[in-house]
Length: 68
Image 1: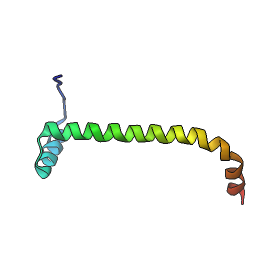
Image 2: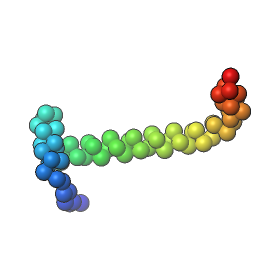
Image 3: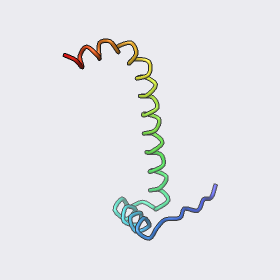
Image 4: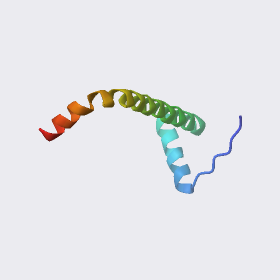
């Protein structure tokens, strides 16, 4: 699917510099940035899920440690 991305002059310059430094196309840089951000979101969601299950189990212990 084609998409138009509107960047400020400064953002476009940064993208140009990053692409040149990495020897990649601007499109590839944007695709990698998207993949990286998506992966971080998945990890954050996974951590939130684990914490929502684990924290209630150890709430009393965490409170005692916090007041020690």
